[in-house]
Length: 247
Ligand SMILES: [Zn+2]
Image (cartoon, rainbow, N blue to C red; front, side, top):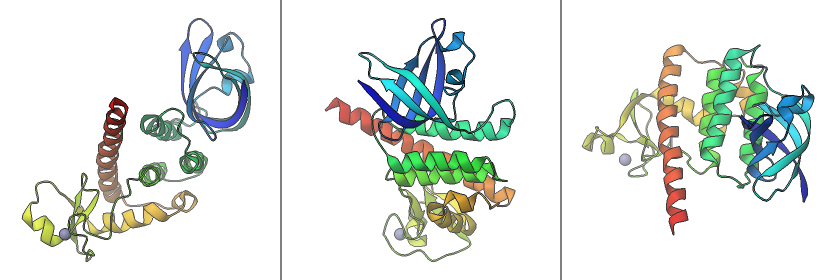
């Protein structure tokens, strides 16, 4: 059986003497792995369509053990590694996140379009780090881990904005003064700026975020919280998957 799908290359590794095994995040089939045979023996467009960060149409044979890529047509090649090293690194980071948090064969149109969008706007943004961090928060929202920036995660009361606030990674959001006064050890002190920024990042299109910048000190705070939040929830989803499979 032959199938045709749009997809973005997440990972590409050499296999044997001339082949490549490629991980693709596809629009209609979710994440897939497929082999391209003999591709490293010829210098062709076929070869470059299998580089990471390439958005292409793939024509694929359903194989017994692994699917086989028969033809490709490049729609957009996001970055040439040699030319734009910094942006290439941010783009690679985005596809790495998608590769890590998705399971093979699970279709998610929202995430597919978000990935396509972030790679597209990384090309023109002045602040690739802000765009990449925003992509990570929006990815978590799409996967069902929406952080709360308005209501306390412990008692659900509406948060009053204050200069210093507390955030809990494992509760998934902001903690009110009353609750945080009971036990501060588990909470991270954050600025009001971070809370307000968080509210905006969850709902603002990447096309608009791509035109924004934030001060360095705020970026450091945002980066720290993003890394902690993403690490906690990607880890959690793996554990849940393992648990579900063991049933
Ligand atoms: Zn509370």
